Length: 297
Image (cartoon, rainbow, N blue to C red):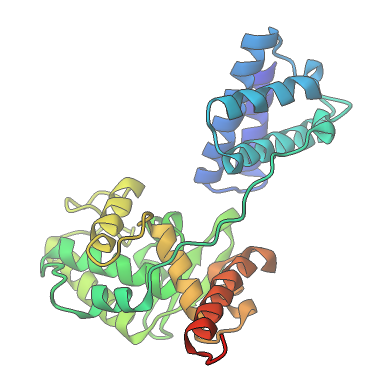
């Protein structure tokens, strides 16, 4: 019964809520993991027979397995959404999650690349991208992340038809299939033109904007490796991922005085709370300026 309920829930997320494939995949993994644990430990496969003690024991097991509090909370969020669906479908009459408290997580400031390091990466000739198709593509990927702050999944989903050179805009399909329009900077426009010409020379006709060297659809691991490779040349920060460039985009805008609501819209956040985390980085920057420059600090 549990497997059938999970399948129904996944179908609901796919066809009614229109969640992204990445979000749906995460839900499926979390719920399947929970289902296997419950069947193994309690020999039950019906959501109606699962109580809050069983769920707590699963959380304890996750902690024992060294799963971070942040990851546990994500799994718990998946389970909460699942049980709300089951309540709606009248599969269960009560929600055991109402008695389960999530583990506390420490607030981590978003990691970002310093402005001078980004300038070195994109401006200086000692960073060689190469003049071939892969070189133009790799440079465009880095500039696009830094110029727009888009997510990895959003970058992979971009199509050539999403570019509007007449209006200097880029259409981005975000979470839950929400579209937003991003401005194209002069630098980004130039790199887009060079890359598209290289695509044509390569004989690539794929509707997706970014492809592999052989013209196949781009995949997340390749993009991650590209970003990590080039960030490693200019910064020693531990995290060197596409999401770090998203953090860098937001932090640099805020440091230059951009309005928080404008940054929220550019990032595609559903609410302002998700964007406010970047204000902490700016506060830390102001503290350092004060400490280093004020005569009485």
